[in-house]
Image (cartoon, rainbow, N blue to C red; front, side, top):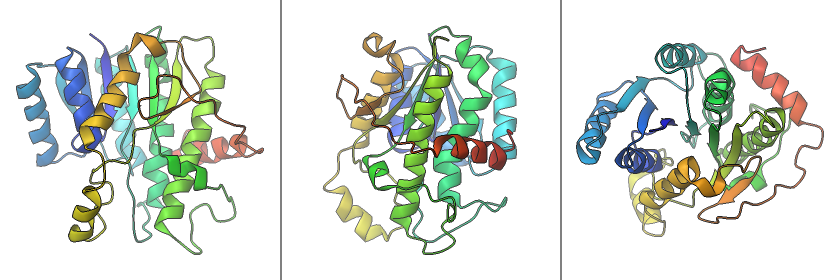
Length: 274
């Protein structure tokens, strides 16, 4: 049994991955909002998988204080974590800020994975062969890191905010993989496919329904996450990018252009980890 954390596992591909891995007998920690929906999904996964080791850890990924509380709970109960899947993500049509004044797409899609990964490093390394999986998107290729307008206070576009945050996560993935080399911890990014999830829930319901007709079902994405989480085939692979079901990871080009160290420092400052 592995202890596997999955953020955003109350819907979409996170839920599907949790279901698949629970059926395989692994302990699942669902990091989701404290809501009746989350509790219902937790009960559903337990019922359908026959696995009682599925637990809800309430968290608000836009709130550093909430993440600290969740991590404190996890550390007190699970000194060893085998897999962290940073899956949760949002796509906001209109610009919003967290209570801490951070643009919310950047906060949830990049700073939350950064913060959770950094705070849980010790537990993941205690596994001996721990894994961090950062769910990103092919759209990261359209992103840019502009420190003069990182929060997109000027000229906000939803697509730009999303792509920029995913690019930041890819940069973080590569840098973290380098920093933990030879510790037994593997860190990878993956594109699960273009899937019919509720990530684009800000769009009108009719438009979302039409779009979903042309997208893959969430179960496919769940299978791809589960594969990276426990497959022996990728046990020693780190610092790479997986596209859908490609067993062979893709080498990431040199994307940093001198920005990675500055981005890391800024992430530490914004999350209070400096």
